Structures are given as C-alpha cells and as structure tokens.
Length: 596
Image 1 (cartoon, rainbow, N blue to C red):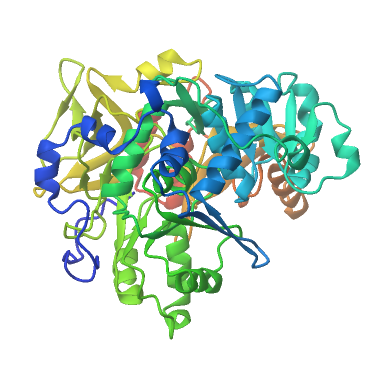
Image 2: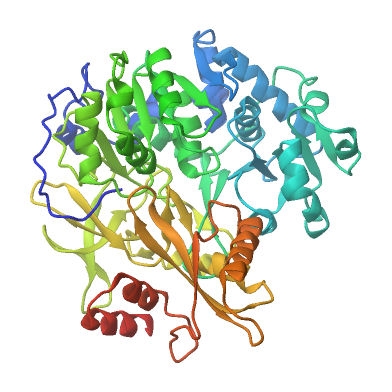
C-alpha cells in the first residue's frame, strides 16, 4: 500500500529497466476494457468431468496432467543452507498423501485444518492437500502467543492442526483442554516420545508419509469454502474472512498481470505463510502460474537475501516495505559485485510503500519496486503498478482487469457515491469478483456493513488522480500496521489487562521508519501498584508471552488516567494525537469523531 503524499517524486518511465521482456499485461487500458472473468477461467483446467473448480488441482495436479510434472515447483532452502527441490509431480504426490491422511482420521469437506509452523515443505503439502480434501484451511503466524492461537482455533472450529514439536510444546499443548474440538495434532519433524503419547497427537512420518500417492479430488463447486483468514479489527475478536475455491481465478489473473509471472520465471515471495500474502502469493498464485518458487526458511537478513537473489537467479521478487527499509538503512554497499542480472521485476505489499523506497530500488537494483493494494477481504491484488505503466512513486497504481474501483463519499441520501479526481474518500470496489470474501465467520451484520449497494467499502481512505492512479491516504479505523502485520489494539489491551497490576490499557501505533508503526501501550495501574522500570519490564514480558513478540507492545507509558468517551471507551485516537503533538483543533475533531 502507498502513502498519500502529493506526487513530489518524478515518475519512473515504464521503459527505464522496469522489465526485460514483453509484459503479460502489455496494454492495461485495452485489456481492462475487454476483460471478463471467464477469460481467466479459460486459462485453467477445472476438475475432470466438469466436477467443479479446486484450488489445489489448478495449482498442482493440472501441471502434472498437462505434462509439466518434472518442472520444479518449490526450491526449499533451510536455515542451515540445505536445499531440496520439489517438482510438480512431487508436490502432487505429497498433497495427495496428506489428503489421504485426513480421510484416515475421518476428516474432509468443511473440517477446519490449521497450520502453525514456519516455511517448511510440509506446510505447503498440508495446505494444498487439505484443499484437495475440501477441508477449510487456516494458516497461523508461528510467532503468535498462546492466546491468539486459542482464539482463532475456537472461532474457526479447528479439528486438526499441523505444527512442530517445539511449537506444540511451547504454545499449544497447554491449550488442549480449552480446545475439545481439536481432535488431532500432526507434528512435523522428530518429536519426543512423551509428546506422541498425548491424545490425538501423530507424527507426520507415521501418519502422512505412509499414505497412497494418489487422491481423487471430490466434486468442488466454485463456491465451496477453501480458506479462512483471520484479520484484526479495531474492537473485539479478530475477523474471520471466509474465501472459496473460485478465488483461484483471481490468483491466476493477478499472478499473470500484477506480478507478470511467465512460465520460466524463478519467483520469490518473502511473506510469511501465516498471513494472507504468504498464502495467496507465496503458495497459490505462483503454483497456478506454473513457475518455480523459492522458499527460504530463515527470517530476514540482507546478506542472505542478496545471496539468494544472486545464486537462485530470481527473476520476480515480491517483498515488504519493512524489509526494503531495512535494506535501505544498509545502503548499496552490500550489493557491490552481486550479479542480479536475472532480476527483472520487483513488487511490494503489506503496508504503505514510501516513495523513497521506490526510487531507492531503482538506484540499488536498477529496478523500481512496484507497489500494489489489496486486503485480506479482497483475497487478491486489486490495484497495482504493472510493468507496462509508468510508476508514480507513492501511488499504489491502477485497478487491474476485472476490477472496478472508485473513491466514494456518503451523500445526502445516506449512500456512497463516487467522487472525482483529487478528492479524498473511501476506496471502494464494485462487487462481485472471484476472490472477494464471502462472509465474516459467524458475523453476518459485520459483513453487511462492508457493503453499500454494489460497492465493497474497504475502510481505507484514498484519492484518485487525473491519470487514474490511486493514492493511499490512511485507515478509516485505528488498526496498527507493523512490519506488514495487522494488529488490533483491543487484543493487546486485553492481554495487558490480564496482569494483576493493570486497571486500564490503551494501545496505539507510533510511526517508525523501519516497520511502519510500533505498538505503544498506555497503562493505568490499580491501587497499590507503583509505576517503575521493573514493572514496565514485567508487563512487556507478560505481553510477549501472551501475544508473541510481533504483536506485543514495544514500549509502555504509565498514566494516572486514560482519556475516555462518556460511555467509557478509551480514546485511542486522542492518545495518538497527543503523542504526536497534533494541534489542539485536530484534537477536538478526533474527540468528536471518537464519540460517534
């Protein structure tokens, strides 16, 4: 996503090294005019005998059926440098084994299969194998603490979870009594015998590896549930965005047009598979497009990343602004002498991409980073800077084929109406499109509020310029975006309040040059407790244990009282305004808005 600053940076011309081959979307305007979603359906196979549309079939088995089974689908690079290649035929067999394993446990269509692990090969086999079995897959971020894991498992009715022995021991084992519907746990890797004695715990080797290599995917109507992605809201529990198998049409289109994937590309998406980007564009879209995906188990390290780009001859790279800003802090010296000539297209996702980062990409790599916009709810990229268009640094680009976007404001009739260029409003998309969420789990009223007639209301404020480029202005709510993660203040506040010293907590995001925002908490203590360094460290440790380091606050400030509305709601926006030193007039506006 992109910043809202006026375009003070010069455009980067489309022929300034932005691509090294003819792009798939060579004429964006003409393609948008004539595109129909049935075109994307024609690129795919469909289940044999007209039995429907299944994501895993299109991502894996289709290539095997069409004679491309020997092509490398995944190249996995472990933390210790080990490398394993998996062909599309290998992946077809591995995913079938997992589908058979689910069937052997009596699980299948509609059952919740959760994944809690890092970038291990088994994660990819489990996700796609569960989709073959028509189970509903939910990936979880492995850095979550026990409470976020339990909440999501309860909401999503987890029946089976695939994880590692270490994560099971630290985060899941103590939750089993709280999760009576979680019947089975599959442990990847060598597990201590004591863990395997727990009820319903299986080793991957004993349960999965012995299964048959073939599986017949049952009939899958396009509207069959496929993925359940949790995304944080401003209040209450996380929202469970429900997606269907028809979403694969959008994965195919956006992989081809937004990421410009060609058959012979070597592609690397650095997103964690626990988030929607790591699922849609780290797993599904590249496999549907038939390319070779690089999977790097280790977390960010600039030197390692540059080595991967060079050694693996990566041609298309999809990463996050946080990582780009970390690389910018190191300058271009670490790139000296690197042969990155294979690299032809770079894109960014997850949070606003500063104009400086786009330009720095041009300086450091000879290529700009192409920003794009989408949400968990949209299921796929909706607006993008594509190779055949000039880049306006700071803009998130133009709508893709099949996507109708507008900036809307509420009119006198109470409904949303499009406004012209240069006017701020809410970014809206005209429904339907294939990857659009079909609901929020058990929250129909909350889902209905996302729509006004035919418009999906994104909750993001934006503007459109005269050339049809869209510019991100800000969130309509106060979700914190840190290093690409969406963090709900309420979830962090709830964990802090569990501590016996805490009476009230208010949580905000503070701008940060590296990760976008860092989480800061304001805490009011109960009588008998005194603020101090020792208590602050204790509260920070408590929050990290409950929530995980990625979600917990990085700093805490003690306050005698927290600002509230008359109804008792803590005014986070007022806390943030005062923290950032906004003028008094802005504070009164924030206060009145918070009371609505």
